[in-house]
Length: 249
Image (cartoon, rainbow, N blue to C red; front, side):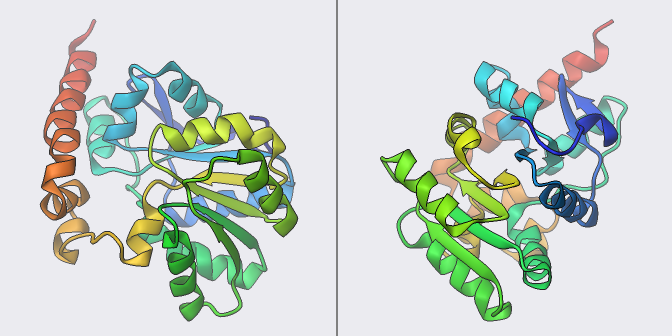
């Protein structure tokens, strides 16, 4: 995935063999601006505990993360893991938080955004809510359950986006981007997970006082049947991997 930014220019922390960029929310948007201005073909990814656990066994996902121009922290568990391994990450940044900053920056800069993801209607509703606050925002959408990737890519390219957001969940979204990135004529493609679900209101984040501190616990309380294994088992597995790496000579 060639792009306009050399990842070596960003300070990084190694977390279980995956390089995570030391960047805060303002710095992340600065990276986006730089990549758009460079007019290359860059990719932005994130890691949280779930992504780290999947990448431990999914070589294609691991390769995707290694090749991405920016990989930022999207989970408090990764912040903790980095700290236990002797590194420091400035903060965790989840899409439901930074998307509003991105919309404001895009409106001001005139960036064109194509947002793909979620069930039919979800990305469109999320975009509508962004436009309520940022009426000059230029944004087009498509849901994430499409069969004809070439038709979607053609629609993207026809919109002439500066930035493409792809949210299908890990590892589906990363595989889709890896397969189609070379054909997408946009300076930046950014995998975004369930951001559209949250912004549209389809999925609740739980109490603000909780998700601002422990996002995983807030999500578990909202949807325990679907997420208990990811968080209760996954967090334990991740912490065990970190502790093994910490004591390994």
